[in-house]
Image 1 (spheres, rainbow, N blue to C red):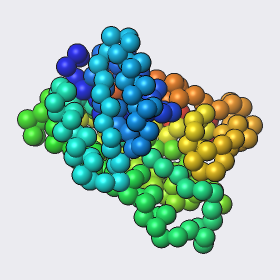
Image 2: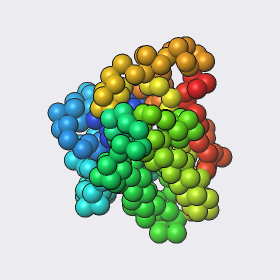
Image 3: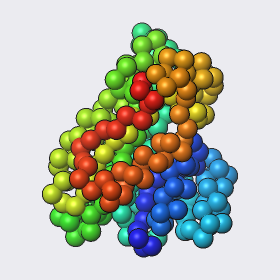
Length: 248
């Protein structure tokens, strides 16, 4: 596994950071994609290197195709691509649909949907046996919002994650015979700063009583699910979406 590379978009904080550390512990060379927080990305790289792992940080706004191409070009120089974790995503401020400007919706879809599809495209080009690759795994980060719809909060975000669910299923079928498994994870209320970017930093803890398990989840709990899906223990799992949501 020492020459296998995993690309993790949005890898500098939250779930992405936890996934980067977990992948490194399992022998992957980690490409930490980050949109703007270079210091946080470098801290993830330093943490991995402190444990004798290998990692690099690459600036990448997945809403820009040129950045995605540069991200995978950097990964090519780092080793053989074995996995992609499509983690980068954004939410908007709490809003009803009838108050949303077109620019917000377009940006949401560009990052959460188009960006994930383009990253997967580049991963398939490298990992598919059809293209001379040696196989691999793609894990897409969805959300339980895809099932709940997030009314009066961010229906556009929920819709983007619904698209990720459909994409996960379809791409999984498409490349199942080419050595690539594709799976998704729907996190529930997780204790990360994505809620702050949506204007409600306490949202996860405020809604925790509505979760059957009566608590929020941690980024490490999502990362554990990610690395399981990437592992040989999940070798017969594809076109599947796993809820990691405390029952929500």
